[in-house]
Image (cartoon, one colour):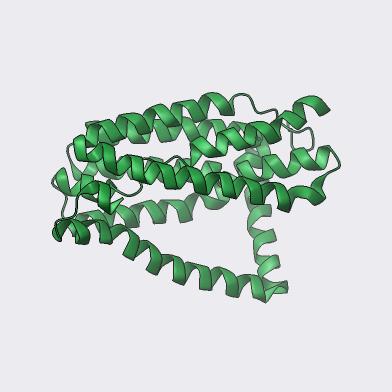
Length: 255
């Protein structure tokens, strides 16, 4: 089991590279505008994404505790592939809204679960103290992937938006196949579950979160500060796509 658990670290580097190889991150506003969505409708779609994320954050954490980290990671990639496919075939605001809901659900299924899978693997190996170092290296790998993907997405979308989204599906399919190679650490493996356990897990998540915020006020302040800065950064990052397009820049230069 230790050998299999140790493999999770190596697999984690590959998985997170493809996870963050987000081809469409710098072009999706332009794509939706190209498909007939107004900036107001695009803003509503982004709001739907974040509201869905807010609603699913705790339930997805409870699911990871009950069914395992690997289950959530694999399910998240499968849901994201469906979301990306819907972005291609949808022709209405409703269709795009469903895609954004699924994309947010995929993000929540992966958020926390992937990190916890790595931490639990290190814990099982007795090397949990090296988590910060390992996760720092993973963040470096993810940043490289994001940088390459953003530029490549712009280049492809200058040829055709369709190429960028098809490649996005291919990349996430690779991430899904890689995720199947994870091994669930025994410290988190739970074989049996029922409705009462689901309810208890969710309740425990809420109670624990509230207690942490009560005891450690600095965590609450950091969360609020991060949310404020993140909302400003997100608004500028996404709407600048259309702004630069209006100035006449190509999608490659925008990326």
